[in-house]
Length: 392
Image (cartoon, rainbow, N blue to C red; front, side, top):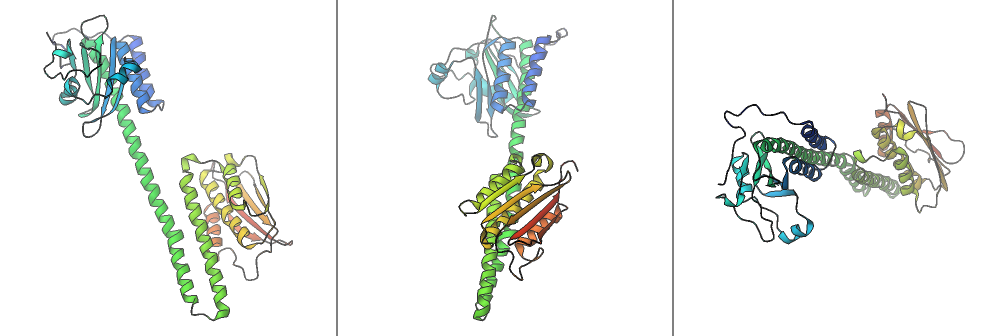
């Protein structure tokens, strides 16, 4: 007799015995696999191993289905590598496996091969008779199935086995849904990041390129004496736009959750901006910067340093540059000093010119200031301060 069962209770049966402490401990261990941050395949492997061990099965597997009912993940235990290689193709959800999903109810069989919906086994697949399959579901949504084959020491699986495996299937469903929700959140984060980048490119780059083009167009009609000055101003603006594009690329390659800390970021920017320039570079960094300055303050400071060094390399004709980051508990002070020709007469002060205006605005947004300080020796001394954000 085949012995198919598609219910979880027996009318008139006495109260079910409470699960043993060992069983409870193993079920809690399966739940802990989800909360421990294991990836989905590792969690499913743990659940299958637990199910086969507690129910006394020789073989076990979980088949995960996509929205169209196709098997997209198949985690199994009990077959060695050589047998798996010989079988080749993974199950596609036909026969008893498909029936578990179709009816969304548990299925216990004494002999799988005698079920009318049995599809047979592929070549090299071991013979399997006793069968216990339960849907992996939350509510009415079925994510796949968890099934066991070949009960050790008995002809078929028991009702207690069925209840136990249903519990593990529910845990597997939570793991699968958590994984899918996490993937959706990541997709949303990527979309949000793309929108932010698009806004930055529009506000910082495209509009400025358009303005620089208009400036050059208007310059054609100017007297020769004024033409050179206007073209030089447009070229400076284009240099600043290029710097903004580089910063946008930098933001793409260093995701916020991969923030490297201010110390490493400062050293990377100094190297990037001064490499092959011939400048003698000195960098002094307070030892506790990474702990005192949060990601927002660090990103703003690195952006400011990139802009300052870009101006030094392009305009100062300097031979050396010093970068010093220090400050008290609630403040960060960055001083950049070069020995170049210094600001030329009539140079824009903070608040005038896109680059300097942006530096001042970023500092003010973080409760600080940006200024070109008085400096008696040849060269330029730039001071950037912000209020540190950690702990406030």
